[in-house]
Length: 92
Image (cartoon, rainbow, N blue to C red; front, side, top):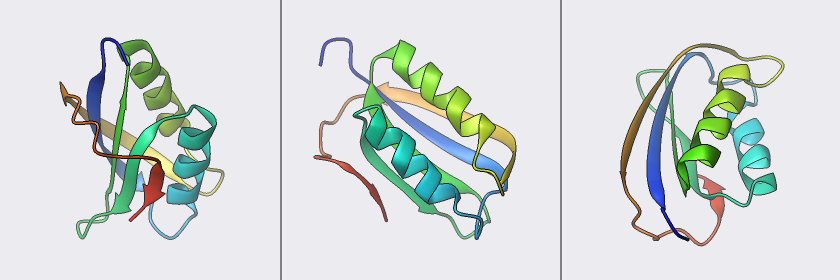
């Protein structure tokens, strides 16, 4: 992957218990992204993916839209270097 960037998203809103992680996994898999999504104890969802900047920005817009039963109010995004330590996209 050239120009690989790691994006860590922290998604705020009504995002737990509404199928949001499955929505994220389905979209990430369709986009051939590798990484993970998981619920955090503070009620937010963390998602990590590695790709090029354009794909990372597109994926953020998909996260913002959310699943049909979720309501995303804010997304924090931090960029760092790729680690290439994921073989697929999983819910953890």
